[in-house]
Image 1 (tube, rainbow, N blue to C red):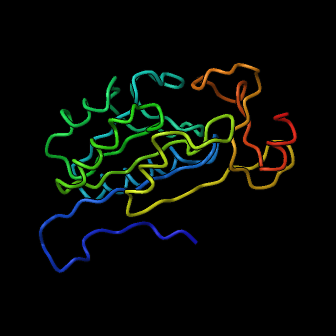
Image 2: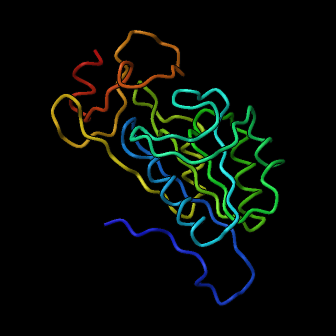
Image 3: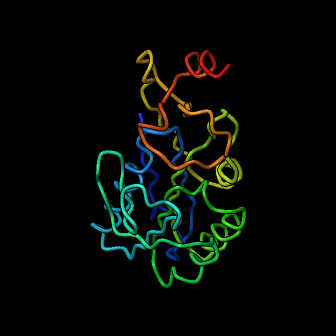
Amino acid sequence: MFIEPSIGRSRNPERKGQIEVICGSMFSGKTEELIRRLNRALIAKQKVEIFKPKVDTRYHDSDVVSHNESSIRSTPVNFADDILLMSGDCDVIGIDEVQFFDEQIISVVRKLANSGKRIILAGLDMDFEGNPFEPMPQLMAIAEYVTKVNAICMKCGDLAAFSFRLSNTKTKVVLGEKETYEARCRKCFYEDKV
């Protein structure tokens, strides 16, 4: 059972920052969970800012949109440092598709959390070859909370943790949806990877 991270239990009234990472394969519900947490913060009347990499225009140029078509307003940015400059006096910062940022995102997230902000990140933890997708492993290591969500294997129906690319393209970053990727369990991923 998943228990959502909570804030505000400290005896110290001063706001403390934290980092939450939501990770998993394609079609696992990472963005859906990010949107859910951000909407709860908005309901609580917290100041929220949401960012995504400008390169991700699959569903919408600016909004963060899940595969289920849930959406939330966001600001597309080219570089991780842009997030630091644009976060202002918000309480909560959401960042989707964090694996598309360069390694500078690690220091940006640290600075924001150290300044008292709640940072919620969502992204792929493994690339199409089944290897750790930087900078996610480092972000997971410095986070207070890590939630790994699973998809359903599109081949056998078991739990899936891998993103299987349907083409032979070897480029690390290829934006795509169901025509480009399938969620796969370990067995089905490695059977067809050969």
